[in-house]
Amino acid sequence: MSPKIKRIALWICIVLLALQFVAASAGKLSGGAQTRFINWGYAASFSYIIGVLELSGAIGLFIPRLRFFAACGLIGIMIGAAYTHLVHNEASRLIHNSIVILIALGVIYFSKRQTV
Image 1 (cartoon, rainbow, N blue to C red):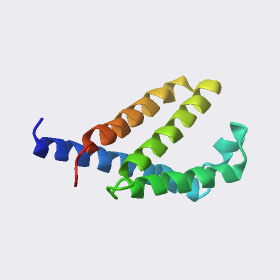
Image 2 (image 1 turned 90 degrees about the horizontal axis):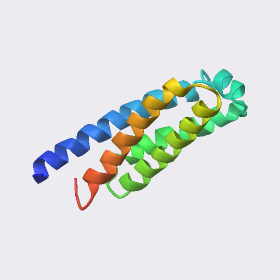
Image 3 (image 1 turned 45 degrees about the vertical axis):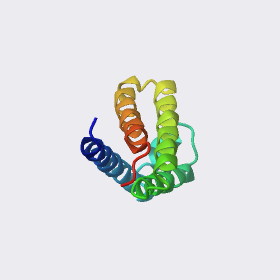
Image 4 (image 1 turned 90 degrees about the vertical axis):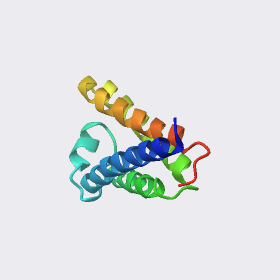
């Protein structure tokens, strides 16, 4: 794969992932997700923690030295989300979790030995 195509694929993955997590964090940081977190058995304040982590990860994707760690952290959040959805019979949401994880893996793959 040519370096130019690799760079374009990387930026597509970064933008898609960042948009996903900025939108997700907005719902959590505004307090709109507290009821769902409580219904899942988590403390309401946990939604704020996840929101901050999601926003931090989205920002970290744009910083080359942090990109790998941001993508890994976002994968961790999505694995936790998938577990929560699985335990609470929300299997239809696993498709979304899987797609987001694949995009994050794309960021990791296309970032290898890439300076952008």
